[in-house]
Structure formats: structure tokens, C-alpha cells
Image (cartoon, rainbow, N blue to C red):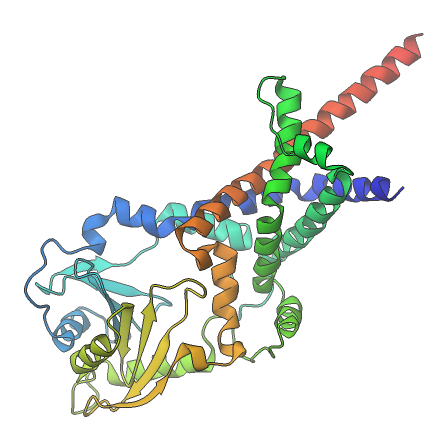
Length: 384
């Protein structure tokens, strides 16, 4: 009786939401290795042609980029990788996440970063079903459909495991096999059942974390589960980012007597010496951050404040000392995209997303085939 109820839940949620779930999972899989694909396709954009003895001072590089910008845009910081072959990333005040890449040895501006149309398409598909985001980040039609479909996917996965979970270990062993020599029907059935079992945990984790971007009420509840009170800031930076942008506008074009980029190089040299194993260092006006090549929260970083006139470090806040409220957003993102465990977990996330995209398709195939068989039996009985 219980399995019959869950079978109906599984079927009647899968039919209307299946195709949307496929699009969400497929676009998610495409985004997993976006960075690697872009660096492979545009190696000359992200890397310098030749590593020289020493890079140019950061103040000089920032000023060179600032000269090319309109009055409404300013340089807000520079991100430096531990890899000497990677070009410096010069961050801009707007639009959001805008940046310019520059050869730190020659001062050649390589160009402004622009997301590839393919990945822009996939991102909009994954997050908003190709709808457009509202300026106030409130829920809109595309975002709502993605959120509801993801929530229904959670119930589909749970009901699926109830339906197909075997009573004995021997049956479980058979359920985890995918036969390739017993016809297409058996192959699609095995792919649906075994694939769902293999990817169940990862798909559930990605769905449950992904919902935090869809619904504020869910995000607040998710945070509370981990003992964190959600801070009242918008999803794209909040007051701190607004203040930083305002400082950039006021200081980035030379409104003060001293250079707005004064002592950036000195701060970078201090931090790189203190943190020999860093992954990247970002220096901006009055603050800096250092991130490392480590597992876990891939957005984790140590934060520093310094005196812009002297370059003296005045405050240090290590990531390990932060409250959970300052860590959870980075953890949610890292778990959702599979980056928390390095390359291995990202590969697993990629494979699980592909399986998630295939589950509705195989489910439709099995359902339509079963529906046709029932109609055929009814016709035969009617002709007798």
C-alpha cells in the first residue's frame, strides 16, 4: 500500500516537472567546468606570454587600467594568483563582477572579462529558465518555476528510493547493475533505477542547497537548521558591497590628493610573505583578502584591513575565527557545485548532474511504453 502511494507521487510529480528538471540538471552539469573550458579556449587572455624577473607595481597597473575607463567606472582592486604565469585581474566598480585582465610584466591590457554566450545561456537556464532577474532580486516567474521544480525533484528522488529499494541484499546487488546486452527496454530501466540510486545522495544535496537561491523562506529555514540566523542583506553583496562601490566611485578617479592605489604593492608583498601557500590575494582600497588551495569552503579567505596612506596592516580576521553565519554561504555554494572536495567531487557532481538530466527522460520512456502496453491489452480484450 505504501509503495503504491509513493509510486503515484513519483509518477504525477515527474510527468509535469520532468523536462524542467532535465534542463536544470543539464545546464548545471555544463557549468561545473566553465572555468577550465574558458581557460583552455582563451589561454592567451588569462595567461601572460612571458614571465619576467618582476611584475610592474600594482599602483602603475591600476592607474593604466583606470585611464581607459569612463568616469562612471573605477578600479576597486587587483587579484593576484600564486601562479606567476596568470595575468592580474583588475576589478571594476561596475557592472557587477566586472574586471579587466592585464599582463603584469608588460602592462598590456588583455581585455575586459565577458562571460561566454554559451555559459551565459546555461547559467540563465539553470537559475531562471531563461527569464530575466529583477533588480531587487525578488522571486519572478522563471526563478519560481526553477524553485518549485527543484523542490518537486526532492520528492521525486525520495519517492523513487522508496519504490525501488529492495528488501534483500541480493536484489540490491542486481538493482545496481546496468545491463547493456538485454535490449533497450532493460537498459533504460536499469539506467533509471541504478542511475538514480548511484546519484541519489549527490542529487539530493545539490537540490537542497540549490533551493536556498530560490526561496527566502527556505533559505532562512536552511540557515536555522545549522544554527545560523540569516543576515538581512541582498543576495548580491549587501551594504558592505554598496559601501565599497561608493568608495571606489569617490576615490578611484583621483578625487583625493594621494593616489587611490597607494601602497597596494606594499600590502600585497606583506601578505604574500606572511602566507607562502596562498592561492590568490586581492588588494583594494583599505582592505585585502587571502585565499588558499584547501578543501572545504572554496570561498574562504582571511581578511585584512590596512592604512591606505602607510600600507600598515591594522586588522586581521582569519577565516577559522569567523562565526558560522559568515561561512555558510560559501559552504552552500561549494557543496552545490561540488568544489568542496577538489577535482574529484567536481567530477562526481558533473556525472550526478548528467544522471539527473537522464532520469526524467528514461522515466518518460518507461511510462509511455507501459501506457502503450496497457492500451494494447485493452484493445485485445475488447476484440475478444
